[in-house]
Length: 553
Ligand SMILES: Nc1ncnc2c1ncn2[C@@H]1O[C@H](COP(=O)(O)OP(=O)(O)OP(=O)(O)O)[C@@H](O)[C@H]1O
Ligand SMILES: [Mg+2]
Image (cartoon, rainbow, N blue to C red; front, side, top):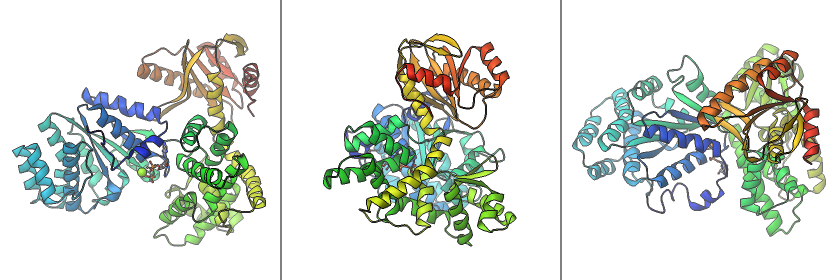
């Protein structure tokens, strides 16, 4: 690998900003080792728009290329590729050849053209490969896709390498032909040296492809959810733009952005401009101003991404105004059932139900226990105000900001609490203070371990809120929902313990479950029988007090 590998795709200034994603990268890295042992998996990263999927892929490729191992990545962005069958087939083969020969060092130019393909083939110098590609030109549309999808395995076999095909915006594959997914599956099953890492933002479509039993790709890929940042990661990312800043500033950015890295970066950059160029004092109020001008001024980055998401969701859709009415109402109330929404918007209940179902396909909202919610709270904020016609200039009056902040607090902070976002990361902060103290948990005196690291633990779709490593290793779950914790919840944690122990190769010594609404009686008995520590908020607050940590609400 040359020192400037991937400069054209992932320049050093972008790389410097890359923050966290340790758990995801660890999983990707583990998979590389499995691939080298012939036991690799195919993986797909799924997450909200602009949450950082592509950046994780780039960082992964960069590290992989730097390691100089046997696995060669090829980055295929389906968003930027012609998807007409012949065009796709030759561009795909051209890209794979280019990545194979250049290992990311050179920018791909003229990819898929005859000259490019044959000069790359000449570099490899294998006559079977040349024959295979020459024959491709004679095939019809269906066969040529098949041949192209088969090509990486052939290349890998001939060169004794492993290829990792990285498909970005994977959902676009369905535009190549109507039976491309079953075709892809049949090819995939015959390949052992070729593995796939996919990513995409069309959550609904991707979940259909990978999660529904009737889909040919069901269970073929392990899903890695890409989540918002924690409070700590947020601080790390801001530090890269603003330098070291007081906790109250980074906490405010975390609250307003809901840990979404694109929003964090946008707020931090605006704040930097206000502070360093306009010489305004760095206060939480300035953070509010940065957030609202980014979100509600048409020049702002957050405004533009929200407008883009909105436009993209409704391109080609009729009766946009009904969707707008429903979204506007939902933005105001935060959540609602079809009946509630219908009543408040004067739309017939059956009609509202149909439109809400269609809205679920746009990835803007989700449904839980018969109620609908926005997936992205910042987008909700944008809808709420822009649909009311509120547009800010770059330096809005402080009174306006004050008013917006007041409303935002009231409407949106409950969303953050509901999602448990702040709660989990605060519990992790508390865990970091563990250092041999004696406290009461589950009504008994417990000596806390000295911890070395505390992180969320994620593998496939299995998540644990905190994994604390130290003089003893703990797994901790936070239950922040409006119901008591059950035996089933505790059983799940026991199952996760086994998985963590297997994957990490260490013993977990303690399980601790914190539940805001407490525990069902049989869950208390189950916890006692299985040695699981359990605490309600009161007990948690007593521990927080002893460790001089601020109270949990
Ligand atoms: N790990 C990270 N560290 C630093 N910044 C990040 C990180 N992840 C995302 N960002 C910020 O968010 C932006 C969007 O990231 P990226 O393009 O990877 O998202 P995406 O999920 O691929 O988006 P899309 O849905 O448009 O495909 C980045 O340009 C960067 O500013
Ligand atoms: Mg992307």
